[in-house]
Image (cartoon, rainbow, N blue to C red; front, top):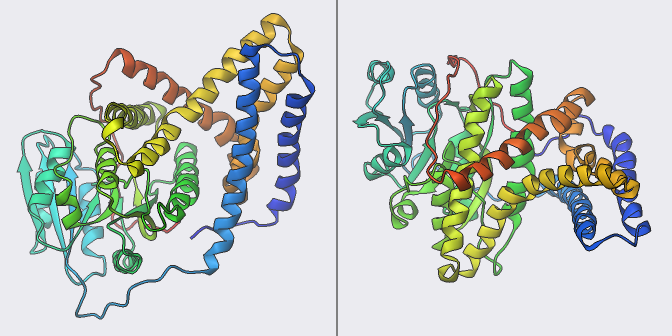
Amino acid sequence: MIKIKTPWKLAIYLPPSLTLNLLILQIFFVKRNYSLFDSFYFYYCLLLTAYCLVKGFIFMALYLSQRHRPPLAEITETNWPGLTAIVPAYNEEEVIGATLQSLLAVDYPDLRIIVVDDGSTDRTGEIVTALQEGRITYLRQENLGKAQALTQGISRVDTEYTLMVDADCLFPADSFKLAIRYLIGQGDDAVGGALTVANRRSPLACMQLMEYGEDTLLFRRFLSRFRWRGGDRTQDVIPGALGLFRTAALRAVGPLCGEVLAEDVELTARLVEHHYRLSFCPYLVGATVVPETLGALNKQRKRWVQGYLQVVIRQLKRWRKLPSQSRYHLLFLIYKVIYWPLTFTLSWIYLGRALVIQDWYLLELVLLAQCFPFTLQGLVRFCNYDLKAHLLYGFGYGYFLLFNRTYYQIHLLFYPQPRWETYHRFALRPQTSAKGG
């Protein structure tokens, strides 16, 4: 559920945020004799201002609409459908034991677990074997990649529903039952879950916790309310780290693609193309291990950024063959890939230009645009965290992500075949519990 820990902050936050937006609009309308080159940035800032306002209204609408709970299917204790969790693993000795213990502790009567070891060279196999019981199936393959590991796991599923989870996640006891009831009650074919952070012991982990909250609370919840032709729902991605599917839908779209780094995004694109209904499930919750150093975070986000861009390029090449719903889905992906890196690049280009030509109107606009992390864009994090964390996210972590996205998207154009990079993670303690967001 969407939570506001300190509602009183809204009274403090909204006036300066709206004032900053109005200042940008005022500069836009006062300066009229700008060149065609400069006018592009003025119009772009106008679009950015409108975006922040709309995002704030969407957040408030989603927050107020929580009074209307989505229908959950009623299932008797003897009629729970079969559910299989697929856990791909490559050198996961630090976390795989805690993840399997968490899965075994989940309250679900017919839960089976398939661990696909993708050629691990550490103690992953030994740990899984030591924990192995009737509900756990251990498969091992050569190091072929996560997509092939998931494909092999799906081929062994004989239950009605399939859950894809990463090997570094923990789950609350009642999450799977609520998720199955939600999926059946909504008539969806796949739902993505809400990930939170398991290792909340550093400022960098706190920044990622805030990022995950914004992403799931706003964008994916908004897409869940989006209707195409009155019926179909969609998502930009059903995360491979926590995604629940009808097994028949998974098999209908074919094996996962190993040619891209973001196989879950590519799978989602094919589900949309086949007109399956996708949604965000607030009841499907998991806590995952996040990078604890900037180097590890950089490697992780490089894979995400380039994986998204690979899928966008593949879909653009097939534009004429795509149904209309897939074209709208592609627009959502393009937004995630291009919007903020474009803002970052334009801001620095025009900042330099304003200083060189000493255009104080343009310089004022660019400097105000740099303050957008403090506008309605940051409504969620401001209401749930202190001012220090909010500013650190907006002016530190946020700009790190923008630079990362911009650099690695350009990097992919020169090196079109990126490789998967791994990073070290700390040991995940079994007793840690996941908390919903």
